[in-house]
Amino acid sequence: MEIVAKQKLSHKILNYVLLIILTVVVLGPFLIGLWTSLLPTMDIAKGNFLSLHISLTNYVDAFTQTPILQYLGNSLWISIVTTIAQLIFCSMSAYAFVFLKFKGRKVLFILFLATMMLPFEAEIIPNFMTIKAMGLLNTYSAMIVPFLTSAFGTFMLRQSFMQMPDELKEAADIEGLGHFQFYWKIVMPYNRISLITLGAYSFLGAWNQYLWPMLTTFSNAFRPVQNGLRQLQSEETFNDWGMIQATAAIVVIPTLIVLFVGQHYFKSGMNEGAVK
Image 1 (cartoon, one colour):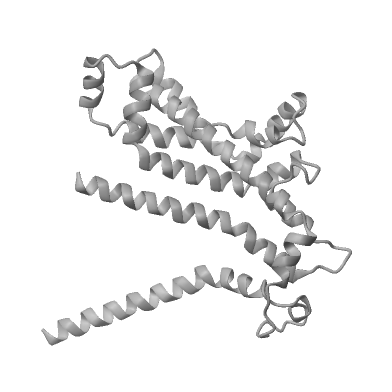
Image 2 (image 1 turned 45 degrees about the horizontal axis):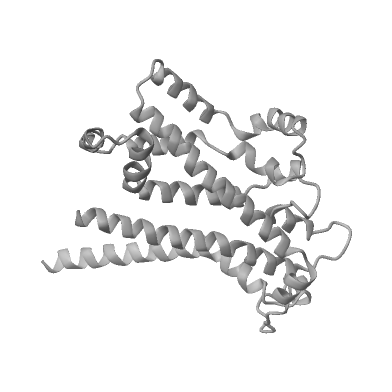
């Protein structure tokens, strides 16, 4: 028994050591960046990262000397509209593939999934030409329209909708509920966890967009925060790295909020499911 207890203790210690190492690897760069954002630029330039001359000056400069609020507002608007659109259109298309019986449904779904195999880089040129022809360059629409829906979101929600008990649809038919009523009153609430997951995924995807906005925006009025952050760096003049790091830390805050809120609702939904 003593040998078994020692083996369990050694196994537990090994697990904790591995978890600590993984935590340092994952959080290390973020914590270093956060610490650097509090240091004066001269200390950073000298490589004096252990300096204790910490202050919030870089954050004050980021808000007063850069259009960071404009960038944040642009990204927030783009991300929210994109997320809402994907939740609506992906859930509707998933509902159609699960609850509507029509000819060629399986073939159409296979073709729908085939678009997931195409990398976004392969779609850039036709998308750019389409947006240009529509006169949408350097507008919010240029960064929203190509992402109003996604094959991944439809696939994920379709799999979730297929797990619903058949009795729910039969009861809805008996009660005389139409497709839209069944979709809105039963399907959407029942699959809340999947919708929250897709919403968080869509928001983070839109927030972290870099290549597409770089090609379609030319002014700070519509430039999102990821591209705006790049504008703060220059190859010809001295970079205020402290302020740049502070701006990068500010940019991360909305994504952390989305992750924490999504995790909270996900756990709540799981607990409700366990109780049921």
